[in-house]
Length: 135
Ligand SMILES: [Zn+2]
Image (cartoon, rainbow, N blue to C red):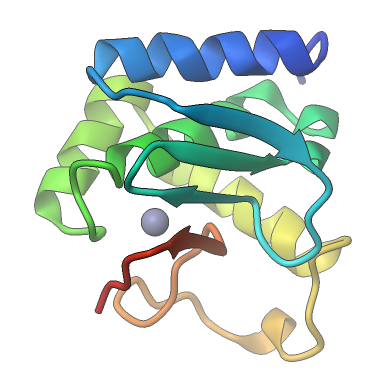
């Protein structure tokens, strides 16, 4: 498994993808979070869970692209999926790995283990957006 060298490498990666997607990032921070991997607001504020630095780099990239795509695509529909594939390739594998970490380690919830993943009802990533809600 490949790991991030540090916060600055992670942030650089965020800016790289943001540039590719022509997204204006206003503020970007890595901080400890207990319940989610990332959060973002449509006006360009991004927060990432500092725990991402401790896990596989690929998974961090998944979270980065996942969040950034939400600037333009508010759901996990067909468009979002095809963009995920375009940027990351086999993103579903990463999604599963990340999900395992969510369920088995620090972000675990007691009911989480038995819950089956349902794309329609839950967001695997456990992220939230500020200032806008999605159905
Ligand atoms: Zn999402």
